Length: 280
Image 1 (spheres, rainbow, N blue to C red):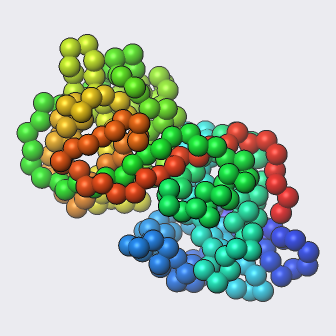
Image 2 (cartoon, helix red, strand yellow):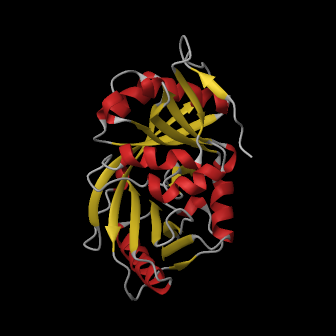
């Protein structure tokens, strides 16, 4: 059973943040329907987020006008899916929800991701103290049978990977890619590698519970030749798993340019070490 506590915002009782319920779903999806040119993903994850007891809605005079979710992957915190009803934007509601989220999280590293063209959200998170950690580009690719010289690597040292990224992508969340994380991912069979002498190109794959028909791959370090072989392996793996689509993420600094890929949006991974809590 999720906490029923309501958090008052400002003076009086007109506005509050509370835990979401299943009854809120239709309303929230209604104002999220046109968030992006292709729609929104909130409908795909709502039920799972609701069970986590970290899905919140912002309510004013009984009407839901905002929503967001907090996740706690690998001892860190992640703020995601923050939405404000189009008719209620430019009122500082995003700042209020960010402040509430930080009051729930209380301490530690927080990350979130913002699409590079979303200037209002970028301005918001910078205003409340978040800084750019890495830039990641989204590409699309189709599953199909494909021969490849890359393979699954069950033991790999980070020292052999050129220009290794600071983070890795895991179901639209980015987590730190340190030695311990790389070892754990390798043991779990999630590291794809192509060796060129003593150097390795590396990708980390994922099949999210939130998006079960999507195969996800993050290219975290290597060369153009190595990335091409890893992409071919990913195409074959996704085909064998019956996935409908492949999302490929590559740090912008890697300058990935392959005919196998369809370039899409650029995303900013932002971070903050929690200190000051902004007033609601």
